[in-house]
Amino acid sequence: GSSVETLEFQAETRQLLRLVIHSIYSNKDIFLRELISNASDALDKLRLEALTDSSQAEINTPDLHIWLEIDKGARTLTVRDNGIGMTRDDLVELIGTIAKSGTAGLLEKIKESKESKDAATIESLIGQFGVGFYSAFMVADKVTLRTRRAGTDSGTQWESDGEGTYDLQSVDSLPVGTSVTLHLKPADSEDGLADYLSEPKIRQIVKQYSDFIRWPIRMATERTDAEGETTRDIDTLNSMKALWARPRAEVTEDEYHEFYQQISHDWLAPAETIHMRAEGTFEYEALLFIPSQAPFDLFSRETKRGVQLYVKRVFIMDDCEALMPDYLRFVKGVVDAHDLSLNVSREILQHDRQIRGVRRRLVKKVLGAIKDMQSKDAERYAKVWAQFGRALKEGLVEDTDNTEALLELVSAASTHDPEKTTTLREYVERMKDGQDTIYYLTGETRAMVENSPHMEAFAAKGYEVLILTDPVDEVWVDRIPSFDGHRLQSIAKGQVDLDESADGETETDAEKARREQDFAALLPWLTTTLSEQVKQVRLSSRLTTSAACIVGDARDVSPTLEKMYRAMGQ
Ligand code: ADP
Ligand code: MG
Image (cartoon, rainbow, N blue to C red; front, side, top):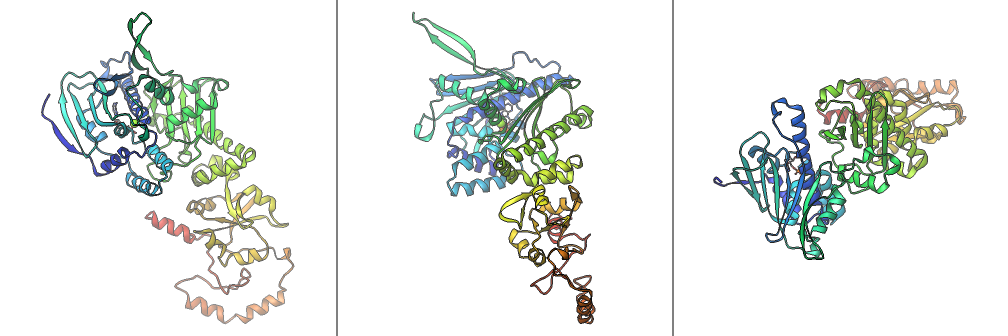
């Protein structure tokens, strides 16, 4: 070996490590899932590199696997893979720092939940973020990682007690791949620390969390038979069944949920499972899930899409944007296409006619599933809408092919019922005789919208008004002219003609003329005096109790949207 170099963890990493070590997870068993998933990723990467990069053609990839080893004497558990491995620089970058955006925000949220001692929330936050490798420090007081990157000559050892620094040193003659050795803390049931030197315990954890991992997870086991003879067997602990490739009728609800947990790291069962198979010229299987809870970073710019692409069971990529539009980024799952090259790139996928067809079909499936929920299980639909409605409404701007389907899904607060939201369809069914317009008002909060002077005449005359308070509402209502033949109209913009005959309080022409005469001098004076602030001052029949209100031009940007654009720096 060579000399040891001691480096410091990045500040945010240290913070996160402290949270992990001081047992924010009540379930410590998941450290193994994290290490196995890293090993599996490393095997995928090696396989892919060997298949696609001709300069790496000499990479040998027989018998890719994950190996678990218990050493009772040394009190260590080792997770080894013969995957891609890491260079020294990789180690510093990937293990020493957290490059992911949104870390600071997440730590903030975790701190808040910690104060309220809400363990489940903390776990789900961490789970979404995937602290991954660091979870090793929940069960180990020292971690030794040895690795050699495929295609390079020398290996590196990384070692740390998770307390702020780590040691790096070069190591000769390592096999390609990575081994992570955990120097285990003593078992402590009160602390949730099981005996991770126990073979049955390790089997149970692998079965529970890593059964669908597509590489064999092996362990040597020793058996002593009746004659006292000891034999050493090598067992494969996981089934490696690709759930999506099995017929729906043969998959149980529990299996779906376990699979969902594995790919999403979400603790809650999904709100909906969609499993489909397409046969014909372009064959594929898809297994998609609508989560029941939105991730903390659903609206951050870097949020990834949740759909993975496989080609004939070989993992190709995460975050496959060609398969799912931005506004459905919360959908998780797997698409396994049979007739693609393993070499396929994101660019190729974006322009592939077949893939575009798959995407169209998946979008329709997802929207259809939510629509079904709406008619068959209103409560579940309401929950899904509360979590993902804001994202779905982006679809009204992005995805003109599905405008109708999306409009059917929209739920909004309304003056009709202070407790419940309404769909546009329900609104239309309640419209007054002679009403042919859907009225809405946008604003920052429900209270602000309800107390707006614009509301007065509508409330007085008994017209229902939709109350739209999401920033994205401003954008989509601008683009969508109508629903089911009924114009969408903001009550704060342009001339709104309330159907006077509806309640019989019609002003005669003579009355109107007299009223206008009364104000003949005042209006031009107000218009001139307020010329900096308004375009025009005119008489209105909108108001019943307020003396005046400000009305936007039909084509003006609304105040909320103006604020939003300003916030986005436009
Ligand atoms: P994530 O898996 O979400 O990226 P982790 O903390 O689990 O986060 O791992 C951080 C990174 O370290 C991985 O993305 C990977 O690049 C690298 N890494 C971890 N374990 C291995 C391994 N066994 N082989 C190769 N690279 C690894
Ligand atoms: Mg990981």
